[in-house]
Structures are given as C-alpha cells and as structure tokens.
Image (tube, rainbow, N blue to C red; front, side, top):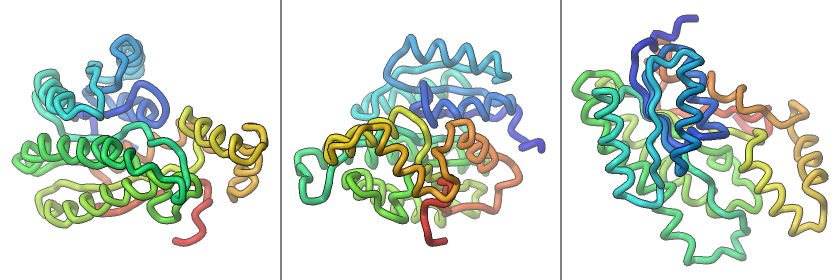
Length: 262
C-alpha cells in the first residue's frame, strides 16, 4: 500500500533506539524527509545514516533533551531549517522511574511533568501553525496502555501521560477540520530497553529474576509473547499517511491483547 508519504517531512523524537527508531525506519521506507532527536549526537548520526540507506529522502540528527525547554525550541527551529517545515510530529520520550502510588516521591512530579507533558505541548505549539496553514498535519504521541488500564508499579507514567492525553484529545477536536489529525499509539509489552528496566524494577521488589518477571508477563499476554519494535513503527506510519485522514482523537493499542477492554 502506498501511504502517500513520499516527500513528506517528519520530526521523530526519541528516535535513536527502541520504538522511536522503529517509527523512523517505517517512515524512511516511505521516502520521508526526517529529523530525528535524542540525547546523543554520535548515536543520532549513526541512525540517520541507516535511515538514508533504508530510503529516507533525507535524515538529520539533532541532539535535544526533553528536560530542557530551550532544547525543544532549538529542535523545532532545526527541523524547520533542515526540511523547510514539518508535516508530521512524533512525540516520544523516555519513561519515568517505576514505583507504586504509595511510594510516590512528590519531588519527581515537576521534572517529569516537564518531560512528559510540558515539552510535548511546547513542540506541538511550535509546529502546529505550519500544519494548519497548509491544511495538513499529523501529530502522534507514543504513549502507553497505562492510559486505559493503569500498569502496576508505573504510577508516574500512568498519572502524567493521562495529562498529555487530555491536552491532545482536546486539541484533536479543535484542528480536525483543518486537515490535522492528532492520535496516540499505545504500546504494550514490547522488547525495548524500557521494558527491561521495568522488569528489573519489579524483579527487585518481588525477589524474582528479571527472566522470571518477563516470562510471567508474557504468559499474561494473549499473544503469548512480548512484541518487537518492528511491529510498532508501521502502524504509526499508516496513521501519518493519506489513508488515515479520518482517524483522529484516538488511542490505538499495539499490545498483543493485554488490555482486556475495548
């Protein structure tokens, strides 16, 4: 299927590894111009070269930290400079430390609010005017199934991602008539560094090995296994394309069936 993305311009945040890289690879295969961000410039340069080899019309890495609002301003400006504009914005960032509601350290709320809520909103506000002016835009947030079924031992993620969901859902209705769609894509247990981190945290709490924790969670997933990053990116690429123009304000799960409700 031709997604109608050839020549489009995308900024993919957190694309040096994991789910962000999977999204960037899927867009590269469609001939998209890419700016990717992360915290390590050498890693970004390596990934950008790989994306060009996959078919990206261009690929540029820009080091930026979601903890710093000035970095977000610089990243938006760099994307404009490199591509002449941004048609697609993929919001992505590392997850906060694991922990229970009873153990929540209130001192973590403000710094992680900046990473998970404030910085994404700042990026949207910087890039949305161009999308509205051209009457085409795609804003996609890589979220979590914790939005619909809170995940034990991930209270910061469950709490703060819900705040971003409220903003993006509100925004989706305000810009839908202007050709701009706003969606969230929620991964379940997918084999990334983040999934290993959360498994290690739970293992430490329960006295089990990381391998035991992963095996137990895999048994709780109807698909019977963890997903792979390559199974995530293509769905995001579809939502960026011409055929998804009537899909907005949605949370689309890629979770092997672990969330029990529709």
